[in-house]
Length: 290
Image (cartoon, rainbow, N blue to C red):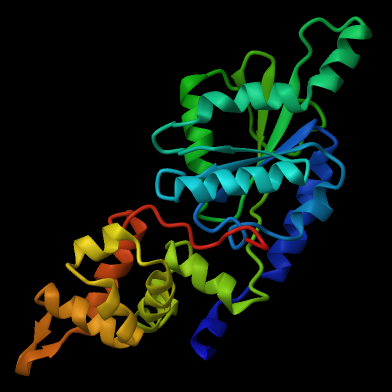
Protein backbone atom coordinates (compact mmCIF):
# COMPACT_ATOMS: atom_id res chain seq x y z
CA UNK A 1 0.00 0.00 0.00
CA UNK A 2 1.89 3.02 -1.26
CA UNK A 3 -0.28 5.46 0.70
CA UNK A 4 1.00 3.98 3.97
CA UNK A 5 4.60 4.61 2.93
CA UNK A 6 4.01 8.30 3.69
CA UNK A 7 4.36 7.41 7.37
CA UNK A 8 8.00 7.76 8.27
CA UNK A 9 10.04 6.76 11.28
CA UNK A 10 12.40 9.44 12.57
CA UNK A 11 15.84 7.82 13.04
CA UNK A 12 17.48 11.10 14.09
CA UNK A 13 15.00 11.61 16.90
CA UNK A 14 15.30 7.97 17.92
CA UNK A 15 19.10 8.06 18.10
CA UNK A 16 18.91 11.08 20.42
CA UNK A 17 16.21 9.44 22.52
CA UNK A 18 18.23 6.23 22.85
CA UNK A 19 21.17 8.22 24.19
CA UNK A 20 18.94 10.10 26.63
CA UNK A 21 17.25 6.95 27.91
CA UNK A 22 20.56 5.09 28.22
CA UNK A 23 22.05 8.02 30.17
CA UNK A 24 19.07 8.01 32.56
CA UNK A 25 18.84 4.22 32.98
CA UNK A 26 21.54 4.26 35.64
CA UNK A 27 19.27 6.48 37.75
CA UNK A 28 16.36 4.03 37.83
CA UNK A 29 15.66 0.51 39.06
CA UNK A 30 13.00 -0.44 36.52
CA UNK A 31 11.17 0.71 33.38
CA UNK A 32 7.41 0.97 32.82
CA UNK A 33 6.36 0.82 29.18
CA UNK A 34 2.92 2.13 28.19
CA UNK A 35 1.28 0.51 25.17
CA UNK A 36 -2.18 0.58 23.55
CA UNK A 37 -4.11 -2.56 24.56
CA UNK A 38 -5.82 -2.63 21.15
CA UNK A 39 -2.51 -2.78 19.24
CA UNK A 40 0.11 -4.20 21.63
CA UNK A 41 2.61 -4.89 18.83
CA UNK A 42 2.32 -1.69 16.80
CA UNK A 43 2.30 0.61 19.85
CA UNK A 44 5.73 -0.54 21.01
CA UNK A 45 9.16 0.39 19.78
CA UNK A 46 11.00 -2.90 19.15
CA UNK A 47 14.34 -1.29 20.02
CA UNK A 48 13.24 -0.68 23.61
CA UNK A 49 14.23 -4.13 24.92
CA UNK A 50 17.74 -3.62 23.52
CA UNK A 51 17.95 -0.13 25.04
CA UNK A 52 16.92 -1.13 28.57
CA UNK A 53 18.70 -4.52 28.45
CA UNK A 54 18.38 -6.32 31.77
CA UNK A 55 16.41 -3.71 33.72
CA UNK A 56 13.15 -5.10 35.18
CA UNK A 57 10.17 -4.01 33.07
CA UNK A 58 6.44 -3.57 33.59
CA UNK A 59 3.99 -3.12 30.72
CA UNK A 60 0.89 -0.97 31.16
CA UNK A 61 -1.80 -1.99 28.65
CA UNK A 62 -3.55 1.35 28.35
CA UNK A 63 -7.05 1.95 26.90
CA UNK A 64 -8.08 -1.48 28.15
CA UNK A 65 -11.69 -0.24 28.29
CA UNK A 66 -11.65 -0.12 24.47
CA UNK A 67 -9.93 -3.47 23.96
CA UNK A 68 -11.46 -6.94 24.02
CA UNK A 69 -11.19 -8.25 27.59
CA UNK A 70 -10.38 -11.83 26.58
CA UNK A 71 -7.67 -10.60 24.21
CA UNK A 72 -6.16 -8.39 26.94
CA UNK A 73 -5.97 -11.40 29.30
CA UNK A 74 -4.24 -13.37 26.55
CA UNK A 75 -1.70 -10.58 26.11
CA UNK A 76 -1.07 -10.42 29.86
CA UNK A 77 -0.39 -14.19 29.82
CA UNK A 78 1.79 -13.77 26.73
CA UNK A 79 3.97 -11.17 28.48
CA UNK A 80 4.02 -13.26 31.66
CA UNK A 81 5.46 -16.17 29.66
CA UNK A 82 8.23 -13.78 28.58
CA UNK A 83 8.93 -12.94 32.23
CA UNK A 84 7.30 -9.50 32.01
CA UNK A 85 4.52 -8.27 34.29
CA UNK A 86 1.69 -6.58 32.38
CA UNK A 87 -1.41 -4.89 33.82
CA UNK A 88 -4.57 -3.63 32.14
CA UNK A 89 -5.19 0.08 32.77
CA UNK A 90 -7.11 3.07 31.50
CA UNK A 91 -5.03 6.15 32.17
CA UNK A 92 -7.85 8.65 31.56
CA UNK A 93 -10.30 7.16 34.07
CA UNK A 94 -7.58 5.80 36.35
CA UNK A 95 -8.89 2.24 36.10
CA UNK A 96 -6.27 -0.32 37.08
CA UNK A 97 -3.70 2.27 38.16
CA UNK A 98 -4.03 1.12 41.77
CA UNK A 99 -2.25 -2.06 40.61
CA UNK A 100 0.80 -0.13 39.47
CA UNK A 101 2.68 0.42 42.76
CA UNK A 102 2.00 -3.14 44.05
CA UNK A 103 3.18 -4.54 40.69
CA UNK A 104 6.40 -2.51 40.86
CA UNK A 105 7.02 -3.70 44.43
CA UNK A 106 6.42 -7.31 43.39
CA UNK A 107 8.75 -7.06 40.39
CA UNK A 108 11.40 -5.40 42.56
CA UNK A 109 10.86 -7.58 45.65
CA UNK A 110 14.25 -9.33 45.52
CA UNK A 111 16.12 -6.02 45.23
CA UNK A 112 14.04 -4.49 48.03
CA UNK A 113 14.93 -7.47 50.26
CA UNK A 114 18.63 -7.14 49.42
CA UNK A 115 18.56 -3.43 50.31
CA UNK A 116 16.77 -4.17 53.59
CA UNK A 117 19.41 -6.76 54.44
CA UNK A 118 21.99 -4.02 54.00
CA UNK A 119 20.14 -1.96 56.60
CA UNK A 120 18.11 0.29 54.29
CA UNK A 121 14.67 0.67 55.85
CA UNK A 122 11.86 1.29 53.32
CA UNK A 123 14.17 1.73 50.32
CA UNK A 124 12.93 3.94 47.48
CA UNK A 125 12.40 2.36 44.07
CA UNK A 126 12.80 4.57 41.01
CA UNK A 127 11.06 3.79 37.73
CA UNK A 128 11.27 5.36 34.26
CA UNK A 129 8.09 5.76 32.17
CA UNK A 130 8.42 5.23 28.41
CA UNK A 131 6.04 5.04 25.45
CA UNK A 132 5.58 6.10 21.84
CA UNK A 133 3.63 9.31 21.06
CA UNK A 134 -0.15 9.29 21.66
CA UNK A 135 -0.13 6.06 23.64
CA UNK A 136 -1.23 7.72 26.90
CA UNK A 137 2.03 8.49 28.70
CA UNK A 138 0.98 12.06 29.54
CA UNK A 139 -2.40 10.88 30.84
CA UNK A 140 -0.67 8.31 33.04
CA UNK A 141 1.77 10.83 34.47
CA UNK A 142 -0.94 13.44 35.03
CA UNK A 143 -3.18 10.90 36.78
CA UNK A 144 -0.41 9.58 39.03
CA UNK A 145 0.97 13.04 39.84
CA UNK A 146 -2.50 14.47 40.52
CA UNK A 147 -3.12 11.73 43.05
CA UNK A 148 0.28 12.30 44.65
CA UNK A 149 1.19 15.93 44.13
CA UNK A 150 4.67 15.79 45.67
CA UNK A 151 7.21 16.63 43.00
CA UNK A 152 10.73 15.50 43.83
CA UNK A 153 13.38 18.19 44.09
CA UNK A 154 16.10 18.48 41.44
CA UNK A 155 18.88 16.01 42.04
CA UNK A 156 22.59 16.47 41.44
CA UNK A 157 23.72 14.70 38.28
CA UNK A 158 20.24 14.42 36.81
CA UNK A 159 19.87 15.71 33.26
CA UNK A 160 18.25 19.11 33.29
CA UNK A 161 14.62 18.87 32.24
CA UNK A 162 14.09 15.36 33.61
CA UNK A 163 11.11 15.37 35.95
CA UNK A 164 10.97 13.23 39.07
CA UNK A 165 7.72 12.62 40.97
CA UNK A 166 6.79 10.72 44.10
CA UNK A 167 3.81 8.61 43.05
CA UNK A 168 3.46 6.21 45.97
CA UNK A 169 5.15 5.37 49.24
CA UNK A 170 8.83 4.74 48.45
CA UNK A 171 8.18 4.92 44.71
CA UNK A 172 9.53 7.66 42.46
CA UNK A 173 8.89 8.11 38.75
CA UNK A 174 11.09 9.64 36.05
CA UNK A 175 9.31 11.00 33.01
CA UNK A 176 11.07 9.83 29.85
CA UNK A 177 13.94 12.05 28.74
CA UNK A 178 12.82 12.10 25.11
CA UNK A 179 10.16 10.46 22.96
CA UNK A 180 10.30 6.93 21.60
CA UNK A 181 9.09 6.88 18.02
CA UNK A 182 7.28 3.88 16.60
CA UNK A 183 9.18 1.95 13.94
CA UNK A 184 7.32 1.60 10.62
CA UNK A 185 9.26 -1.30 9.13
CA UNK A 186 5.97 -3.04 8.40
CA UNK A 187 3.11 -1.18 6.64
CA UNK A 188 0.66 -2.97 8.97
CA UNK A 189 2.19 -1.12 11.94
CA UNK A 190 1.41 2.21 10.27
CA UNK A 191 -2.13 1.11 9.48
CA UNK A 192 -2.84 -0.07 13.00
CA UNK A 193 -1.47 3.13 14.52
CA UNK A 194 -3.68 5.05 12.11
CA UNK A 195 -6.77 3.00 13.05
CA UNK A 196 -6.40 4.15 16.65
CA UNK A 197 -5.64 7.77 15.75
CA UNK A 198 -2.01 7.64 16.87
CA UNK A 199 -0.99 8.84 13.39
CA UNK A 200 -2.59 11.99 11.97
CA UNK A 201 -5.36 11.25 9.48
CA UNK A 202 -4.23 14.11 7.24
CA UNK A 203 -1.23 12.12 5.96
CA UNK A 204 -3.38 9.15 4.96
CA UNK A 205 -6.07 8.31 2.46
CA UNK A 206 -8.99 8.21 4.91
CA UNK A 207 -11.22 6.05 2.70
CA UNK A 208 -8.45 3.52 2.12
CA UNK A 209 -7.83 3.41 5.86
CA UNK A 210 -11.53 2.80 6.57
CA UNK A 211 -11.58 0.01 3.96
CA UNK A 212 -8.55 -1.64 5.62
CA UNK A 213 -10.29 -1.37 8.98
CA UNK A 214 -13.39 -3.00 7.50
CA UNK A 215 -11.19 -5.81 6.10
CA UNK A 216 -10.31 -6.59 9.71
CA UNK A 217 -13.77 -6.03 11.20
CA UNK A 218 -15.37 -8.34 8.62
CA UNK A 219 -13.24 -11.25 9.89
CA UNK A 220 -14.24 -10.49 13.47
CA UNK A 221 -17.89 -9.50 12.82
CA UNK A 222 -18.38 -8.07 16.34
CA UNK A 223 -22.00 -8.05 17.50
CA UNK A 224 -21.88 -4.34 18.44
CA UNK A 225 -20.77 -3.44 14.92
CA UNK A 226 -23.55 -5.50 13.29
CA UNK A 227 -26.19 -4.07 15.65
CA UNK A 228 -25.01 -0.47 15.29
CA UNK A 229 -25.36 -0.50 11.49
CA UNK A 230 -28.23 -3.02 11.39
CA UNK A 231 -26.16 -5.42 9.32
CA UNK A 232 -26.35 -9.15 8.81
CA UNK A 233 -23.08 -11.11 9.00
CA UNK A 234 -23.95 -13.16 5.92
CA UNK A 235 -24.46 -9.98 3.90
CA UNK A 236 -21.26 -8.27 5.02
CA UNK A 237 -19.21 -11.36 4.12
CA UNK A 238 -20.61 -11.20 0.57
CA UNK A 239 -19.48 -7.59 0.08
CA UNK A 240 -16.00 -6.25 -0.53
CA UNK A 241 -14.95 -3.71 2.08
CA UNK A 242 -15.40 -0.64 -0.12
CA UNK A 243 -18.94 -1.73 -0.96
CA UNK A 244 -19.55 -2.30 2.76
CA UNK A 245 -18.37 1.27 3.42
CA UNK A 246 -20.93 2.46 0.86
CA UNK A 247 -23.68 0.43 2.58
CA UNK A 248 -22.75 1.94 5.95
CA UNK A 249 -22.74 5.46 4.46
CA UNK A 250 -26.15 4.91 2.91
CA UNK A 251 -27.59 3.61 6.18
CA UNK A 252 -26.40 6.81 7.87
CA UNK A 253 -27.91 8.98 5.13
CA UNK A 254 -24.51 10.25 3.96
CA UNK A 255 -25.56 11.29 0.47
CA UNK A 256 -24.31 14.03 -1.82
CA UNK A 257 -25.79 15.66 -4.94
CA UNK A 258 -27.29 13.13 -7.32
CA UNK A 259 -27.84 10.55 -4.59
CA UNK A 260 -24.19 9.44 -4.53
CA UNK A 261 -22.87 8.09 -1.24
CA UNK A 262 -20.31 10.31 0.50
CA UNK A 263 -17.75 7.60 1.25
CA UNK A 264 -15.26 10.10 2.72
CA UNK A 265 -17.78 11.17 5.38
CA UNK A 266 -18.65 7.51 5.98
CA UNK A 267 -14.94 6.71 6.42
CA UNK A 268 -14.43 9.54 8.95
CA UNK A 269 -17.52 8.42 10.88
CA UNK A 270 -16.43 4.76 10.91
CA UNK A 271 -12.96 5.58 12.23
CA UNK A 272 -14.36 7.97 14.87
CA UNK A 273 -16.75 5.28 16.09
CA UNK A 274 -14.00 2.66 16.18
CA UNK A 275 -11.75 5.01 18.18
CA UNK A 276 -14.49 5.71 20.72
CA UNK A 277 -15.31 1.96 21.03
CA UNK A 278 -18.85 2.47 19.70
CA UNK A 279 -18.29 -0.50 17.38
CA UNK A 280 -17.47 -2.68 20.38
CA UNK A 281 -14.34 -3.49 22.37
CA UNK A 282 -12.03 -4.51 19.56
CA UNK A 283 -8.42 -5.70 19.79
CA UNK A 284 -6.71 -5.53 16.41
CA UNK A 285 -3.58 -7.56 17.26
CA UNK A 286 -3.37 -10.91 19.01
CA UNK A 287 -0.26 -12.59 20.46
CA UNK A 288 1.85 -14.43 17.89
CA UNK A 289 0.62 -17.94 17.31
CA UNK A 290 -2.92 -17.17 18.53
